[in-house]
Image (cartoon, rainbow, N blue to C red; front, side):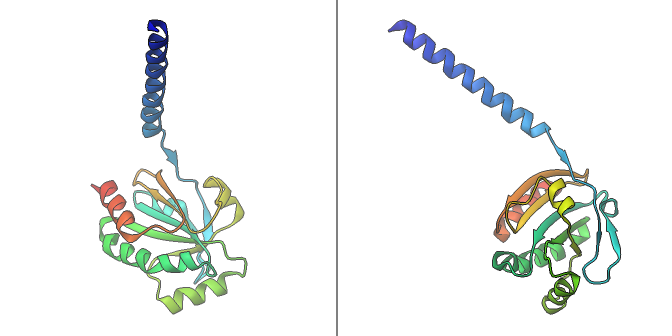
Amino acid sequence: MKKIASTFFTKTAQVMVLCLFLAISSVHAATKMPSFSLADAVNGTTVNSADYNGKTLLITFFATWCPPCMQEVPTLMELHQQFSKANFSVVGLSVDQGGPSIVAKLVASRSINYPVLMADETTARNFGGIAGIPTSFLINKEGNVVKKYPGYVPHAILEKDIKTLMN
């Protein structure tokens, strides 16, 4: 019985050490935001990821036909407005196959106040693949991806994470 207890505690200690190691290593394993060069959906100008150097970003992959994506738009507009003076920007990356005219109509009809670019497959792949939309990435001012949000995210969570990152 003593040997079983000893083995159990040894295994438990090993698992705890492994979990601690993984937790510590994941904190320090920041991933750089992939570079991109994409067309603005409204005016067609090319926008480069380097244009956002030194800014905190919330990059959101979305589509005009996606109900959760459209539900998120007011939140993204509010956050962009709220934090834009603090060197923050929301950047929408549209995965619409219908082209920029469909996206430009959405931007105009919703009065979207943040940049919306036309994403391509390479960009989506470079961000680690987009399994569903919306999918958002929080990027710190050093250009590291610090959080990935698959699916719709409530305003309060995004606001809290942005405030935490900017402090």
